[in-house]
Amino acid sequence: MEHHLTVIIVAIVALGVGAQWLAWRTHLPAIILLAVAGLLAGPVFGLIDPTAELGNRRPSLISLCVAIILFEGGLNLQLHELKVAAAGVRRLVYAGVPIAWGLSSAAAHYIGGLGWPVASIFGAIMVVTGPTVIMPMLRQARLNRRTASYFKWEGIVNDPIGALLAVLVFQFISFQDLGISGVARGLGWALLSGGLLGGVGGWLTGMAFKKGMVPEYLKSPVMLGLVLVVYVLSNQLQSEAGLLAVTIMGITVGNMRLAGIQDMKRFKEYITVMLVAVVFVILTADLDREVLGRIDWRGAALVAAILLVTRPATIMLATIGAGMDIRDRLLLSWIAPRGIVAAATAGVMASALANRATEIGGPDAALLAADAQQLLPLVFAVIFATVFFHGISIRSLARRLELATGDQATLLIVGASPWSVALGAKLTEINVDVLIADSSWQKLRSARLAGVPVFYGEILSDFAEESVEISHVGTVLAATSNDAYNALVCTALSHEVGRSKVFQLPMGGGDDEDPRAVSRPLRGQQAFDSDSVFERLWRLHVRGWKFYRTRITENYTYSDFLRDFPAEAIQILLLYADGSFRLMSPADTREPAVGATILYFAPERQVARERLDMDTDSSEPAPASA
Image (tube, rainbow, N blue to C red):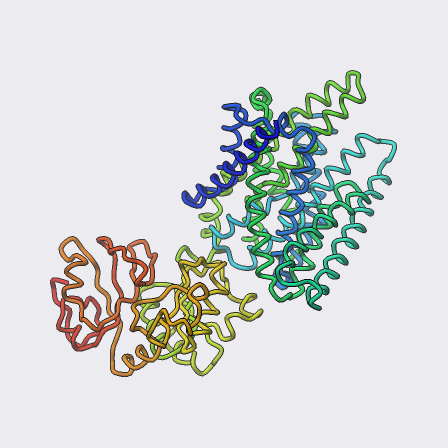
């Protein structure tokens, strides 16, 4: 039995992680592939039966996983984002929650045909907008900071509120003698326990870290353990208040400017990716094939109402007079994907309602049991519909509403020198998005005069974190004269951009493997070639070298280019027909395909005599064959 259970757990983990990897490769929403994996393993082929294998341990396992997921979400919420979205976020919480609950409950009753008890719980679950789903969508859509902050805060804050509301409604149904005052007391206890245990507990933990009371190697494990303790203690004070407590704890710790917080965030993110995969596969594998087949036209109509009526009405009513841009309100009215917390809450509530129906008996019990069986499939239907339709439409709709910054990924050049400014000017000329960052206003002067976008300040500062849309940066080139600082920039930004997309100029010592140089794992990818050190690039720029470009065609191949290419010239960048690009690097040996354009740095006069030149930079006209 234990051996079989081990195989099942490993299979669930493998399916979940494999689905997330496939989502990365195919650029599909991960939650869709996770659901498909669970459905195939469970209802379709019957390979996994979580209820039979895990038994009574399943709800507890799911609850602990969701608690860690919400803590990680709160850890990534930055209070400075509220500077541009505070009024709207407050409306989405204290006005949006009751409106969404009321409208969704009414739709579930009058359209979906559910009785009021289950309809009210369904409406509470519909309050949530899954952060585990909306975050990848935001990266895909490249929204501006203000609009993205609305989605992030609504998703993280409303998730525990919706789960808590569903529990309070269930308690009201189960113990109706509590009345409205009992439900209000429950909500008050939840807020009190969440504030004290989450807020104060998070602050005390952060202070202990600041004072060195916990060694570095234990910070992440200690934090994880305390999150689980806070979750359990808060639940002892008020059922399901733990979700709110861990969310508040995450927000508190995430905004204390702790040293090493990025390492802790990374550790929690890795765990969260694993837990999301496990929980979603378990929930979808646990669906009953017969119950799924019972979703009739009323269920389909309810899903349509949630997408097309209740969500738009909620946003438009809740944000009246909030000073929000109408474009933000329109995008929020359509985009509201439900995710892991909605699924987990529905799974817990469906079981609790079924047990309650068994306890009360009589004719009402049969109706309650029938409705309880419909709850989880209906919630999953909403999850599938919202993730699919919102996932495929958010990018195009954001562009039409002019809330996105464009499809092209930006090249961030750290360090303003005469050479890097000339490169930025050339890239701007050929419609490559570029941003030059430097802490010297004087060094940025020539870039500003050339019309190149600039960031004035330290790129690793808190101000840069608030000001630079790092989610829109696709490639980083650290091009200062300090090799160690270049390595620091690459290490700091690699988590956001990707290790394969952060580059730095070659080390100035000449020997890339010098053991006295910055350690290889701490550096970025080497840009260009081993001779392209900072001093040489500056010297060549002063000698009159310029940037040129050549397009590879069927008649003029890459081999022809290399034959004509000046021996001392430097290949800089490869620009594709769709506007994407990649920096040239010794580690990347792929040959440019037909249609690609090579940007390179070469002496002006020598290039002017060659067929390579396709620009008007040279004093001599480019050959007709080029």
